[in-house]
Amino acid sequence: MTPNQTEHRVTRVLLALSGSLPFVREVGIGTGRERAFASGDLERALRALSNQFQLQLQQAAEARQVKHSFRTLQARLDALLAEVTAADVLIVGSSGTVHAAHARPSHLYLLYEGGESGRRGLALTAQLTGNGYRGATLLTETVLPQDVVAGAANWLQMHGRLPVDALQADTFTFDTLVAALAGRPRGLLLLPRGCRLLQDPLALSRIVKRLGMPVLLYG
Image (tube, rainbow, N blue to C red; front, side, top):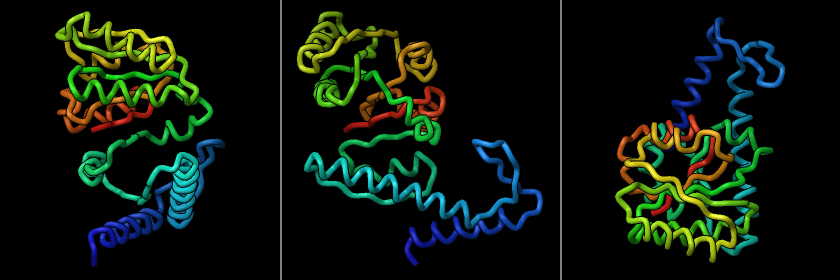
C-alpha cells in the first residue's frame, strides 16, 4: 500500500468514525440548521470541489498553453509544502477565500527583498497585472536603500501599467505584516519561498487565515 493510499484510507476511517458518534452534528453554512453528520455526503462534496478546481485549472492552463498537472493532497500545510517543492509557483488559500469568490482580489502585494528573488518577484507581479488588478504595493524592509525601492516601484509601474506604492517596516513578521495590510484592499500576496517571514513553519497558515487572502509562493 502506497503512502497516498494509506492516507486516503485513514481519512475515510476518520470520516466514518465521526459519522458514527451520536453527538457529532453538521451545521449548514447558509441555513445555520443542524443535522446528523453524514461522512458520505462530506466525502462526495470534497470530491466534487476537487473536480471543480481541476476543471478550472485545466481550462485556464489550456487557454494560456501552459503545462499543468493536478493532484489532491491531504495533510497539514507545512507537510504539503514539502510535497510540492518542485513547483515554480504555488498559490495557497483557505476555505474562506474559496467561498469569497465574489470578492475577487483587486490588489497585488509583493514582499520585495531585492536581489535575484526580488527581480523574479517584480517580473511575476508585472505578468499578473493584466488580470483585473487595479494597483500594486511593494512591502519592503528599511534595510533596503530608498533608491532601490524607488527603482523597483518605477520598473513595476512602467511594465505592469498600474499604480504602485510601497510600505516599509523595520522587519516583516506576521504581526507587522497584518498591521501593514490592515484596512487595505483585498489582494493577492506574493512571497518568495526563502523569505525570513516564512522561516516560522506556522507563519503561512496564520497569514492565510488572518488576512483572508490567497498567498502566491515563488521560487
